[in-house]
Image 1 (cartoon, helix red, strand yellow):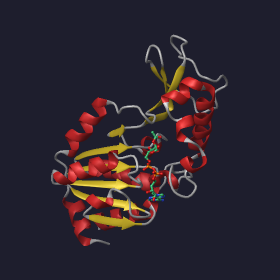
Image 2 (cartoon, rainbow, N blue to C red):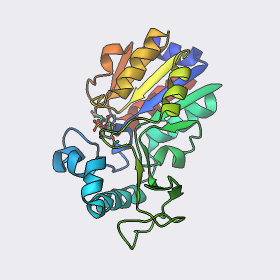
Image 3 (cartoon, rainbow, N blue to C red):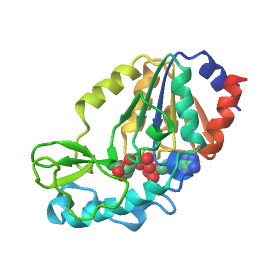
Image 4 (cartoon, rainbow, N blue to C red):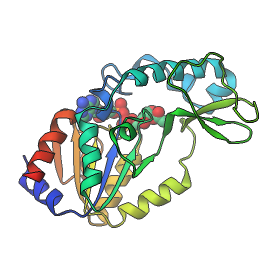
Length: 242
Ligand code: OAD
């Protein structure tokens, strides 16, 4: 293991973790790009855009119903568990995940920004009410608001939509004075994790990238660990604690 990275992680007080689909791959949730990736099989523009939803809300809901059933069967893995322990260990901590599967919260993380939303929530297209979805399959699609009965949509950021400005403000404020940022299992093809890593690095953070292969984040990383997040993170954590 990279001794410099271990030393930096031991000394750090203010730590951010950024995760992507790779951390949930070992829980059985498909990633988006690469072999077996969702966007290899499905066309994102037909299923994950506001235009697709306007054209065929039932089809889009069915796609998310199927994904919800995959998430319902999944459990947090050893990678998620270490991220939860990191939150307990570091005096200042923030997890920013692109994942919508809710597994980090199930693993115990509380200081979390789900920057792409959450598959277990829906939002009314009229009154903006956000409400929780059951783990059981929905019986009537498309779903309607539990308050005003207007059309509801998955509470997810789709292609072509903006990030919640309050989430961005909180994320950049935290990253502007971090000791360490650990990026796990993201290709960086959606550029936000790359921006976070570059920004935190410029503001003095030590940047670690954990991935099966070289990602777009690696260009800003001080240390790179190649392998499965569910194996690398526990090994890394053991070294830090040892
Ligand atoms: P990608 O599918 O683009 O990238 C997954 C990354 O995880 C790749 O770099 C893989 O090499 C790596 N990976 C796979 N298995 C791994 C493992 N076991 N351990 C460590 N790394 C592993 O997924 P994201 O970067 O998360 O947006 O994609 C970003 C966004 O694009 C997603 O949040 C989603 C998608 O469109 C929305 O749904 C809004």
